[in-house]
Structure formats: structure tokens, C-alpha cells
Image (cartoon, rainbow, N blue to C red):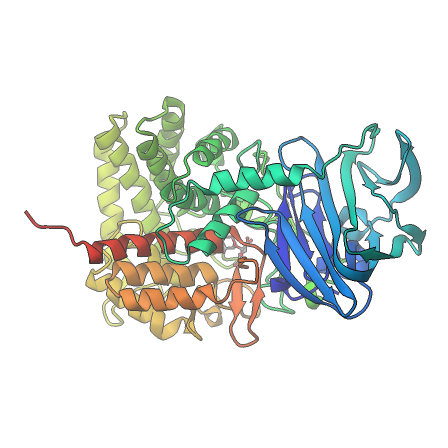
Length: 600
Ligand SMILES: OC[C@H]1O[C@H](O[C@H]2O[C@H](CO)[C@@H](O)[C@H](O)[C@H]2O)[C@H](O)[C@@H](O)[C@@H]1O
């Protein structure tokens, strides 16, 4: 049975990632890529769907941390008989897919249980398992279809009941390393690399990467962890950024709002890049920009709102009926039907990110600009049509106010490219559309009676996505219309200090059931407060949100403030990138308050 979501930590090699529980069990792992079929899928079912566990046999307590500012996870188990440490790591950068688990006896003698239960194709397939020797060393090989998994280590578990199990004592000073390696099933594994020493190299690499991040931000430790988590979700060679490494962790426990996030949304990735650039990282931005150029290459009419990490377009949504779901939340889905939706906000986020890339680098790339021109010209033809909006509603398309405001952003950044970077384009036409859409948002998206911008043109409901209007420069943070919208969000969407995306009761999303507050919207409220000059409210909410991260600094998509637990996919890039953004906005507004600009 899976643990509460917050009891998991993430390890990864920047090609894929695994969730490790406080009970030493890896309950989710897709190899070799984020969106490959899972070989350990207990997270969405039971141990029978695959897990790999090293844990004390009996009563124990757990403490966890990442080693320094790295993504190497250390779990310390304390029992009445002693203390044992488990170090989990996936070495990056070697074109292999390995999970390395090192056991170190710290004190006394602890009896450990080892269970290696592989199920391929999301828990559906029992592999063919045999023992084998590689250069004299015994290993266990599990094969089914395209996949092969090889377990090596000093003391291999024994086969029983479609699983491999062992119980052994670990005394102080003992040191045992187990490694699981994925290979295509037709490739013989002829060498066992010694991967133990790679831990130090990974720690050094992460620590030198994070040293770039500015330290003068509130909750700097959480900002660092968020950046490292975003790094783990960025595919090392293609530059694609996944929204989360999981599928179907439910927005509502027991509900149907269960989606596959192991893909690259242009929106989430563009917002990630924006936060990374603001935090001082430009190399990732270049890698992602090149991913974007390749992925959206072709006719701008064919632009999708999401792609696979290698830019593949077909992400058909399927249900996996053999999996019982996280705490019974059904269906379990793979693929994502939203891939073929119209979402007009997306180009706004992309154009804003690319504008920042240009500014950060101080130069423009002609190929990247040619693509942006083509995409903006295509948006000029379609922006008046209704769309599915930022929340990817499954209901009828609408004229979402946020989508239209982001259309304004797309044209505004295109105009800026011509004005400030000397790039060529029909700037008069773009200015005209920019001004027209702004006027439309200010009239049709505004409700004078309620003094708020509205979710779409035909409703008086508010929507938390409207909190980004000051963040993207559509209006100043202290504009009365922005202040009114913040107040409407506070009145209608705040639940136990956290912010809902919108009220599901209206049925706008075409789904049954409810959901919990969406953490990115709560971070947007922090930023909106700060830009509105409500700095005490901004700090107070940010401090509150900082209490919701789990013991290793990770956040899911949503939070249930009544049950005090995380819901939705985990960890989620959107939550972490908005945390970073809110910290940077706060640092900026704090420094302006301390040192106000002098009027000349
Ligand atoms: O609310 C229904 C939709 O939920 C998912 O979309 C959400 O996650 C995306 C990835 O982080 C994010 O870009 C989007 O803004 C969120 O609403 C799901 O992917 C959709 O298929 C679903 O319709």
C-alpha cells in the first residue's frame, strides 16, 4: 500500500526519477525515461505492482535529508538495536540508468528486510527472472519485452512467490551497495560499473550548480531545493522539462481527477525557464529553447501545448484498468488528452520566457526569432476563438480572461523584440492587436459590480489565474482593478489560507468531484500581495506555505488543508517554480522598501 504523498522523496538521473518512501521502498520508477512504462508501480496499486524495499525488520523510526545541496537522499533508520543508513542515488551523465542503494551500519546491529519485486509495463507483467554471472559476479536478471533489469550486490535476495527476498543483519561499520541497472533486453550486460564513488561526484556537481543561485531570498533553503528539483525534472540531453515525474496521483483522494504529468507542457516549462533565469540560470534556458525549436518545428498551425521529452507529439490518453489507483483513485491514466486542446495563454508564457532569454544573453538568435514570428502571426489568426484555458478544462471552450491577457503578453513581447532588440516584424500590426486585446480584457473580462476580473467573459466568477496579471506587466500591482481581483480571490477562492484555482461547483471544467487548493495559485497570491504593496500579507502567506513542504522540501500540486496532506502529482514543477518566483518577487520588493528609488 502506498504511503501518504508527502512521505516520498525524489531521486533521479535527469532522464528519469524514482519516488523513495520513508519506509525505504521505491514505489515508483519508470525506466529509462520519465514517460517509460513503470517497472515499480506500487504507488498506484500494491506491492504486487512492483517495489524495491530495504527496511529494518520490526519497529523503527526514520529521519531523512538530501546530502548537502544535492539530490542524493539519505534515510536513517533507528531501531531499539541500532542505527542503519540508506543512501539512494541515481548517477547522472553516463547514458545508463542505474539506481544505487547503499546500506551503512552506524551503530549496534539492525536486522534488515530486502524485497526486490519487479513488475514491468506498469505492474502488468511478471518478468522472466534468472541468476547469471558477469565477470564472475552473480547477478539477478529480470527480462520482459523491451526491458531488462539487473540487480547486483554483495548479498542477493532469493526467489520466492514472484519476488526476491532476504533478511540479514547489518552491524556498525558494515557497508553494502546494491545496484539495479536498466538495459534494452537485447543488450547483454557485460560489465558491472562500480557506481559507489559516483555519489561524491554528483554531490559536487549539484553543489556547484546551486552556488549560482542568489542567497538573499526568503526561505533560501526551500528555493534551493525547488531549483534542484526543477533540475531533476529537466531531461539532461533533450532539454525537455516534465511537469512532474508521476501520473494519476489524485487531485482528490478517491476522485477521477487523475492525470499523467510526465510530459513537457510549453506553459510549465516556459514558467520554469522564467524562474530559472530570474534565479541566475541561463544554460538551462538555452537547452530548453533548443528543445522548443525542435519540438514545435513545422507548421505553426500544428503547435501543441505539450510534447514528450524528445518532442514527440502523440500522447494519447489511456486508462490502465489493472491498477487499483492511489488509495483507490480511479482511473489511472497514461498519456494526456489535453495535448490536443487549444490554450491561447501558452504562447504568452513562451514569448515571455524567450524575451527573458534574449535579455539575459544580450543577443537574439535568428532561428529562434523566425519561429516566434511564425507563432505570433498564427496567434493573430486565432486569438478571438474560445479556448480551454490554463486549467485545461474538459468542458466547453470559453473566452477565458487569463488566456486573452496572455495573448496580450505574446504581442507585447513581440513588439518589444522589434523595439528593443532590433528584430524584424510587422510591429504596427502587432501593436494594434496588443492594444485591441488589452481593451477587450479591460471591458469584457472586468465585472464593475463585483470589482474583479472574471474567469471568462460570460461569468461573474473569479479565477486565481488572474493573479498573474501584475506579474506579467498587464497592469501595475497597485492598480485598483488588480487590488479588487485580489480581494475577490480572498473572498471566493481562499480555503484555510490556501487558494483554489476556481470554484468547481460551476461545472466549467466538465469533471465530477472537487479539488483542493492549488499550490501555484497560493504562491501567485504571495507575489500579487508583494506587488500590491501588501508586504506583511505576502510574507505571512509565504511563511505559511513554507510549513507545507515535506521533510525534504518537496511539494505536490495541491494541498488538502483539512486532512493536512498533499494531493496531486508529486513533486510538481509548477509548485516549485512559483515558490522560486514568489521568493524572488519578495526579495525585490523588500529591497525596494529598504532602499526606495529616489525621484529626480
Ligand atoms: O484540471 C484538469 C486538467 O488538469 C491537468 O492540468 C493541470 O496540469 C498541467 C501540468 O502541470 C498545468 O499546465 C495545467 O495548468 C493544470 O490545469 C491535466 O494535465 C489536464 O489533462 C486536465 O484537463
